[in-house]
Image 1 (spheres, rainbow, N blue to C red):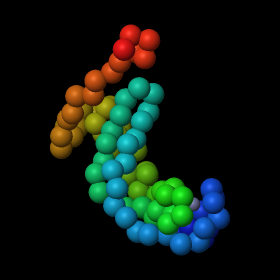
Image 2 (image 1 turned 180 degrees about the vertical axis):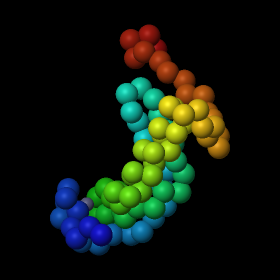
Image 3 (image 1 turned 120 degrees about the vertical axis):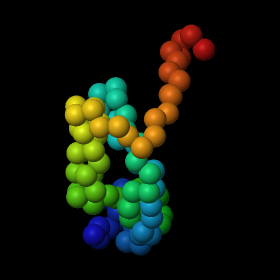
Length: 83
Ligand SMILES: [Zn+2]
């Protein structure tokens, strides 16, 4: 899928399943167990275009079409100057 890491040039990757955090404007979608290839040297993660499209589509279904996600979490937000 990826020949060499575009950050460090390393050619060895490990197939992994990771938690992907998709962010659009100030809204988030977290997807668990997303397949990716991780650079063994610097840890940069590469995702298939198909995988990212699927996540984007799901994001739209949740935020624009009212789909209920499997789980919801509350995320605390602070202003740095106030902490
Ligand atoms: Zn790398």
